[in-house]
Image (cartoon, rainbow, N blue to C red):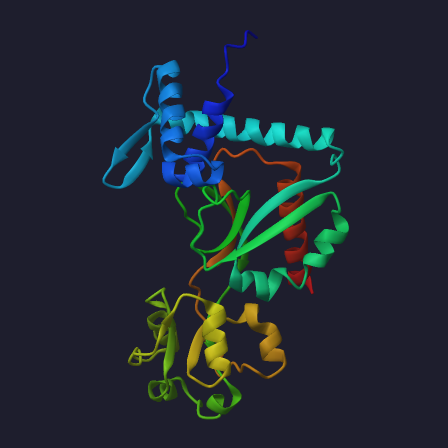
Length: 293
């Protein structure tokens, strides 16, 4: 194959700009000026004879040509990075960048992560938690575990674990809760997913209680407030088994509703590295063992 004069600097700048979705953020990552980023993108566009980005009221949007070029470059730069690590004597280590919604990280993943590290010493697993709002490519992640209905634009999603939601509260609060209607006299803590309590009351067969409690963007925060007696939270009980087992949280009712599941996600078209494949296989095995127990 004939290799043209490949503009590596411009291609690297383009790859970062695509991942960051902004010339400004690309300049910060590359430690150059925004003008330098713009210059390299313009150089690449001139060489290719096509426009790669359009500025709109919604921000910087890639063209079809840019979207087709990006995954090829991302894979190429990842491959070069692994090759350089081998030359540096790090051939046995592969970095895996995982984004994980905090509830799943604390409630399921972290108590088991030692099993993965023992089984795969060749993988440097780096976990960053989030409140379920994550942009895999922009944040430089390989994959992400998130909660939802399993449909995200531009992502492949593999179901991992169903997470039915049920009311959880402190033991003293639970003493007041005999039937679902008793919740009408309690503070109902809410997440940013607005219709969860309505779904639960419908499943319980009664009208929804007034919803005027605080709204939080973290199930962990909801659980903490509930455990401290500030109200009743609707939570995925499987993620709080330890708190239930110790009596810090109590499940007063058997009624549960499904608001989504946990999924392993990755960008469509992203090449699966050996580390990604190993982590996905380990997740499946651990989940299978847990369901059989």
